[in-house]
Image (tube, one colour):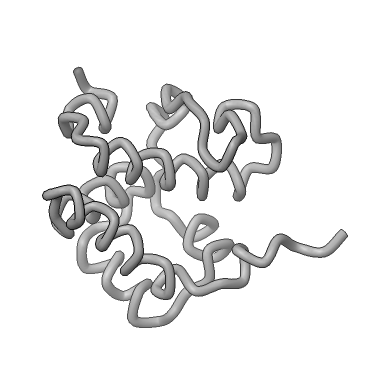
Length: 117
């Protein structure tokens, strides 16, 4: 079976789209970075290094220092598919991130996005 195209795309090529989506709705790059750090465990410096290295999505998630255990609380539909029902682990991580950025763009409070409140 061939890998999905997104796995080999560089995270850095999609990252600006996450930021643009958030900024169009009055949110910030800082908030996008906070979401990514919460989900993956990367420090800001390590996140920036991954962006500079043009790391692909599969490697980005495989090398994540500590995937947040609370990510299992992320529920809902992204691209017509329920994120909690995605069986392939890497695709689920990608869709978790998509869902969190969507929630940010929809104006949800950071505490709710990060599943702390």
